[in-house]
Image (cartoon, rainbow, N blue to C red; front, side, top):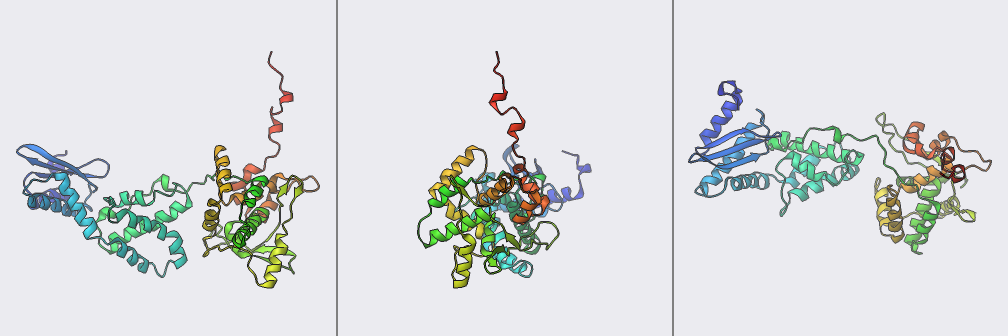
Length: 416
C-alpha cells in the first residue's frame, strides 16, 4: 500500500468519509481486477474481508461509499452480530431490488429512443436482450451485482463474434449507459469495455448444403394438409431458387408468368442505406435417381396470383421468416435426423442450408454443354456482389480436387 503522502487526494477523502460514517475498524483499499476491498477489524483481528464490485477510481468512490454505509448500518442494527458479508448482501438487496425498477427503466428507455428506433427494430434487436435482463433481475433470481455481471448473463445465449450478439450488446450497453446518465443509477451499472472478443468475426460459419436426396426425404415427411403443403411449396422454392427465408414473402411472377422474381431488399452491410436490388430468379432443379424434378413452382405461383390465393405459410412480420422456418423444421422428425448426420460432419444445418444447396450445385453441377457457370453468374442469381459471394461460397468452387492428388487408389502402389 502506498504511503499516505503518495495517495491521491480522492483516496484520502474517501477513507476519511468511511471513517466518519462507519463504526471503528472499517477500512477500504484497492482489490484485484477492477474491484474494491473492505476490511473490518475488531479487537485487533479481521472479522470481515469483502470484495465489492467498484473500481478503485475517483469517479466511483461516492457510489461505493453509499454501499459501505448501508452495510455498516445493517451491521449496527444487528447489534454487530451479523457477518460482514451478509451485511453487504443486505446492502446490495436494498440498492438493487428496492431502488431499481428494471421494467420501468426499460419502458423509459423505449420512450427515450422512440424517434430513433422503429417498433420492428425494437422487437428484433432490443426486446430479446431486455427479456433476459428482466429474467436475471426478477424475483427468485440471483441478481447480478453490477453492469458487467448483468451483461454476461443477459448476453449468454448469443455466440461471441456473431452479428446477433453485436445487436444485443449495443442495445444492452446503450440501455445501461442511459440508466446511469439519465436515471442516476450507480456507476457500477455501466457496461464493461468492448474487447476483441466482442467484435464480429469475419470468419463464416460452415453452412451445410443439403443434398437433393435429403431435401426429398424431408419434404416427404411433411403432412398432406393445407399447412404442410404451403410449407412444402416454400421450401421447394428455397431449394430450387436459392432463396433466403425472408425472400419468400416477396416472390412473384412477371411477364405473364414467364419469369419469377423477388423484391426483397437486403442491406449490403457496407455503405449505410445501400440495399440489394430486386432480382430475377433462375432455377436449379432438385434431382432424384431418374433426373431433374419439375415441381412447376413458377406456374403454381402465377395461377395463385391470378386467383388471389396465397401459396405460402404464415411468415410472421418482416424479419421473422427465418425463425418461422426454423421452428417449423424443428418439429419435423426427418429434420432432426438430418441434423444429426450433419453434426457428425462438423457442419451446421439451418434453414439457409436450402440456399447453400443452390450455391453448391450452381458451382458444381455442369450445364447441358458440360461447362460450368462463372462465379459472377451464380453470385448474380443469388443477389450477391461477387466479393460477398466468394467470402461465403468459395469453398464450393474447386472442382475435382481429389483427382488432382493421390485420391485414386489405382494410382497408389502397394508397399512391399
